[in-house]
Length: 260
Image (cartoon, rainbow, N blue to C red; front, top):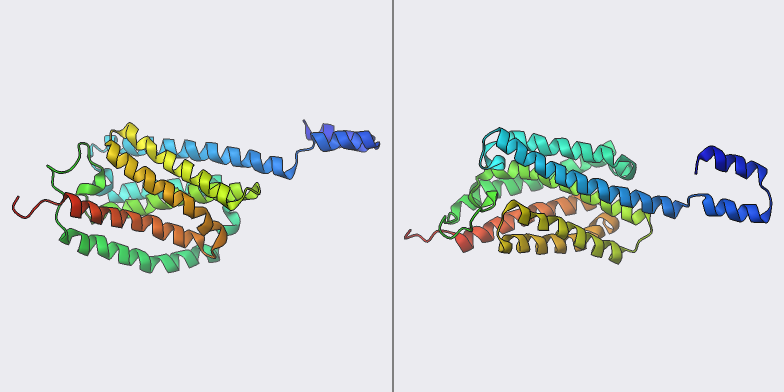
C-alpha cells in the first residue's frame, strides 16, 4: 500500500477499529526481515549461477583447459570483482561488519595463515605422488592436476563464497530464526549449491563428496559468524583448509605408484 495513503489514513483515523486496521496494513519489522531474507536468497542464487557461467565463458574466451591454473591472475581478479559486487549488493546487511578497522584486522590476521597455506601447496604438496591419469576419474576437477598457482584464484573464489554465506546468515538472523534452524538451512543450501557440480559433468563420487563436505560446513558456519568474535576469519580459514586437505588426500589415494 502506498506510504502517502497509510499516512493520510493515520491522520484521519482515530478510533480503536482504525488502529486495528492500521496495524494490519502496516508492514511489521519481522515481515520486512523475512522479505529481505527472501530477496537475499534469490540474489545469492543468481550471483552463484551467473558467476559460475561467467567463469566458464572466460575460460572459453581465453581458450584454456584449466582457468585457475593457466590464468591465475585473471581468474583471481574475476572473483575479486564478484566479491566486491556481492558486498555492495548486501551492504545493508554487511556494512557494520565491513568497517575499515575490521577489514584491516581480518587482512592482518589472515595473511600469515594464507602464507602458511601457500607454502604448503607450493612446497609440500608437490612432494606427494602425482595424481595418476589412469586412476583419475573422467572429466577430473581442476585441482587434481593443478600447480600451486591454482590456489591463488581459489582464495578469491572462497572470499566470494564467504560474502554470500555471511549475507545469508546475517539476513536469517535478522528474522529472529534460531541458530539451529539457520544452521540446518545453511547445510541444505550450501550443500545444494554444490549439487550443481553434476551439471558440469563431474563424477557422482566427486559431487557427493563435495556436497557432503559443503553441508557439514554449512551446518557449522552460522555458529562461527553469529557466536564467535571474528567469524569471518574462522570461516574463511576452515573453508580454505578444506581444499588443502582434500588435495592431499587426493594425491595420496590417486597418486601414481613409483613403478609407473
